[in-house]
Image (cartoon, rainbow, N blue to C red; front, side, top):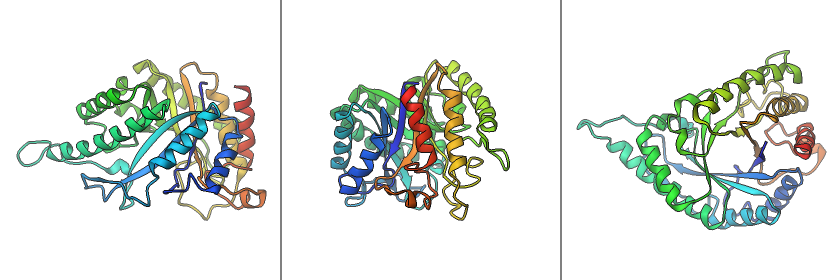
Length: 322
């Protein structure tokens, strides 16, 4: 398994990465034994119908923030995947961004306008990734409503490759890997691996591992179709009871704290996938830009963070021996 990774700072806003708290949080992450980090940060369009992407100065993570984290990681021998991520400011999931395939005159005007902005957005960060020598760039995340526009995606990737010479990935959503018909254009078949491997009363490592084996076989078929390594661009599970059944969940804040279930999710996944030759690795979701730093706080935190929880020890042990 080449990539022993974690995503850092999705919650970050301008200045967070460069703050005292941000630097301490990053130090704690680097101490876990990661050899890669994924810098996932958000830029928004106003709503799912908008064809204009807006960078909000004073809110969005700035280039200075990104450059500090990249330099910090490289100084420690840690590789970086830059992952600019488009969200919709109306709160609707980015997968719902889509447009009619033609207007009343039979032209792809809406798609032309949207991809013009999206390509400019991605090419801007391709230049930054090149200048800072990031080892990977992710060209999109869970853009399900756009994936059928193959010609546009291939053109975008071709434009990006003129500016950036590292590895490229695309982040599909779990269960939709077969919907992306242009994975041959990138270097990694990426997916958000929020596969439901637990169920009520069935959350042991052994039970989850049996479910992961089904996922493993499906991912092998995807690999064989494209002859590309498979990468879990996102994967995780909150430290709350029942979350291995819905690992994508962040809304059910009423669920009781459960570190064992989260730790079993980590253990079972790494147990099943670590020796698969086609499998490139994982970027666990998500290490906050400002992390708590006491066991008492960890016991009250029911999110995806693993710092000072049982899953952190599981990951450290696996990363140390892989």
